[in-house]
Length: 146
Image 1 (spheres, one colour):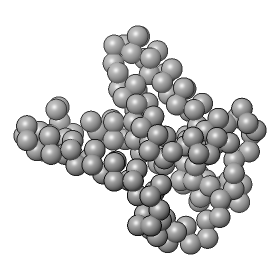
Image 2: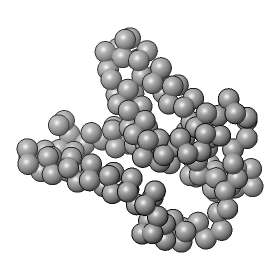
Image 3: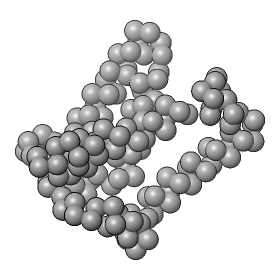
Image 4: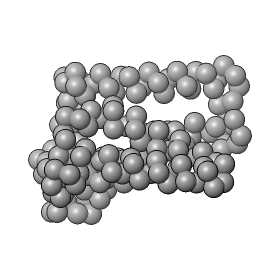
């Protein structure tokens, strides 16, 4: 479950710092390389190879979390990014002035934002509740075996 959670956040963990902070003048966007199908295919391919070689599915679990992230981010609405580099090698530049304020405002006013966030929250609440019910929440927090 920890790997699934990390995988579901992986595109933002990588892309937000790269696109919004380190290379702000180049990308000016928090949805770049790891929000593409190419990244998903690469991580899934590595996961399948690792599974066949070592019988461990942890990378596949990361890739499934990444798939869920792309779906909940509705990446099909920005095909330039999703299908990169098939539609060109450049990413759309985003207006990132007052970025956090705009995201916070959209979270409460834009159904395209708050509905996927509610779905993601419901999934997290469900899994947390299940872990509490079976008495494994402490093991997850302490990184023990579930």
